[in-house]
Length: 127
Image 1 (cartoon, rainbow, N blue to C red):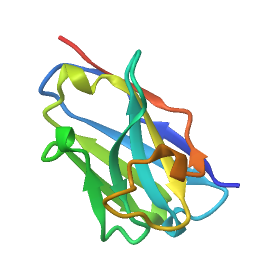
Image 2 (image 1 turned 90 degrees about the vertical axis):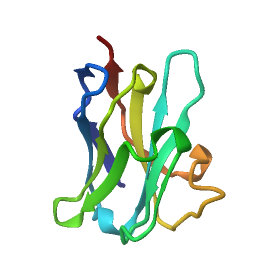
Image 3 (image 1 turned 60 degrees about the horizontal axis):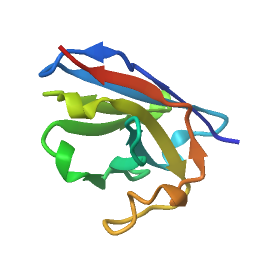
């Protein structure tokens, strides 16, 4: 079974940068599309970004466009979420999730469509 582990979560000041990693074990990650989600206290888990298994297709929620960038290093079995210009509203637990077939613009953010989930990484943006 595919096992995902997020890392890189920490506290950062507004305007700062962080890079989250999603590392897989059990299977090679290059067969899976990856979604990043986040959940702030008292709010629903929302889709943040998506990258196809090949890395050729990415999607981002409007609130992070231009600030967050996805990439994947299949040799390291890892997907990265680079976050810059962080805002307090980016504070949340961030989760990576995987599925074996690709999604498109109308569905990538639907959390029920992902089969495997990591345990989450806390990101806190505060001065």
